[in-house]
Structure formats: structure tokens, C-alpha cells
Length: 283
Image (cartoon, rainbow, N blue to C red; front, side, top):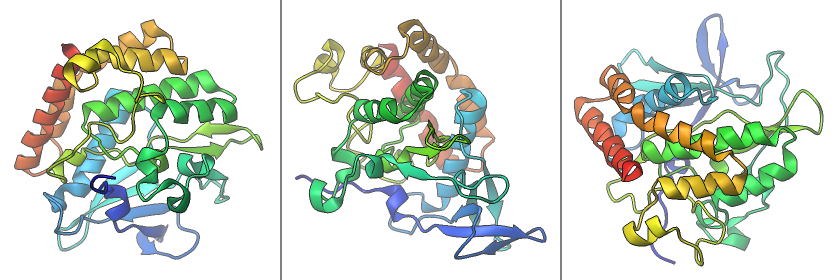
């Protein structure tokens, strides 16, 4: 079975909150926001967690135009940072819409699929297949999904598992759409020995299938992502354009990291992670 995967999103304390008279108030029911404080001290750079998630979400949204949950970084009076995000299963009028993550959609449970079911029971290709069954505007969803998976690879997010992608019911009952991206962060800042470069395999049949690139290098590169795009129905020229644009955006990402609220050490480490991945994609 190997060592258990450390899920950062699973290890995090999360609070439900609403805003009343301009103040953030914790609440057990009817919360519109989720608050996440720093990680516990067993993680590396634990105090940088809120700034990490915030800057990563902003890069996805501003540089790559990936639909993401609205988020902000706020501070306690003590100076301790908190990550704040708006729930997207709550509509503007306060009603809740049906939302399910892909572990739920696939019917995965720890009893049936083992303790690490969020990581082992589905591939990204498998998630896309489920999406195709449930999402009416699939080509748009597939494009956003591809871009999110590729972005996660570039920013060293090793925690984008089956529960970190969801569908929600759209305004039309029974019609589902991919939710905006959430839980985007660089996990390498907090886990020293991040064993795998992605939380899930790209391909459903990875045991029997590897690209020539992967066989030679032992990690994913552009040929793998182009194969992935082909399999999930993203037009190759579009996928290529996005990959090239992404690699070209590294300086913009570094600038955003430079002006972020991360510690200097984490800024340097994050930039090094991106450069390492960009190089893998540029071979």
C-alpha cells in the first residue's frame, strides 16, 4: 500500500462564516464563506498556508482566466492570516444548489476503495468521463478542467484529488456544470517529500499506457498533457496554445509571487517549483 498520502485539504481546520453588519461571524448553519487559518505546526512553512492558497487562486484567475471561487486574504488583530473564500453552492438569494464532488459522484468510499480513495480510485481522465455523462456544456467544462489540471502541475499542487473537483446544479434543474476551481495551492511548500507530481494519474490505463516522454523521463511533460487533452476531447491546437501561453506566463507568475504575502523563503521556493515544472514542460 505504501505510505499514506498527506492531504493538506483534509488536515486543515475550516470554519463556516457569514458577514453581519460588516463583521465576519462564525456560524454552524447558513454560512456563505469558508475561513481557513494557518496549518498546524507539523507542516513546513505552516504560517504561509493562507497566503499560498490566496496567491495561487489569484494566479489561476488573473493570469490564466481559470474560473475560480472568490477569495481574499484577511488578518486577525494579532496579525495571523486567514484565507477567506465564498461558497459557490450558495446562490445570490441565499438558496443552496446541489453540489457533489467527484468522489461522491463516482460513489467512492474508504470502506470500498481503501483509505487513500481520493487519490487512487479515479484518474483525471476518469473524472472527465464522469463529467461527460453529467454536464450538458461538456466542451466548455473539459477546456476549464484541462487548464486547471495543467495549472496545478505548474504550481506543484500535489493535492488536487477527486474531492477537489465538483459539479453543481445550474439554474436549470437537472443540468450540471463544473464548479469554479478551489483548493489551489503549492503543496511542496508544506510537505517536504511530495512523492508525486500530481494527486491523480492523468490516464485511466496508466498501468499499461505511458507516453514515450514519460517512459524516458519518469514524469509528465507536454506530450502527456496533449494526449490527455485528446482523450478528454479538448482540441489539440487549443491545448497547445494554452501550454505555450502558460510557459510564457512564468515571469508574470513570479512577479505576482514577488508582491504576495508569502515569506521571502516561500516566495523563493515557490518560484523554484514553477521553474522546475516549466522546464519539464519545455523539454
